[in-house]
Length: 110
Image (cartoon, rainbow, N blue to C red):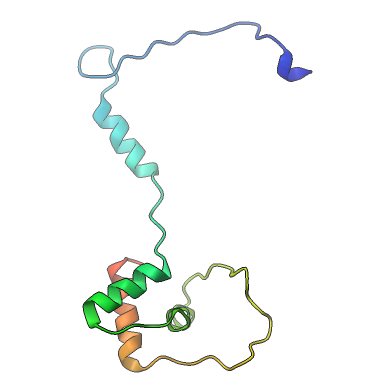
């Protein structure tokens, strides 16, 4: 019933954008919008592609997760996560750990 109620009054607002007296400058709006823009979410795929391009080898997503776990970085909940692992976690080599850390620094995660 409330959604069908007619408004008691209406306020019309006219805004002019651009340069000059009484106008809202577009540059300020663009700067404020950029401040509210959320950061792009860095995916494991992006990290893997960066490492392959720079170092020439591939890393498994489990290795990336292991390094993030060691660094205490936030992890997103996986929809297919299990409570008990079938196999113990495999630890990446020192070379791969350094490559993953470099990729995380490149994307400003650490």
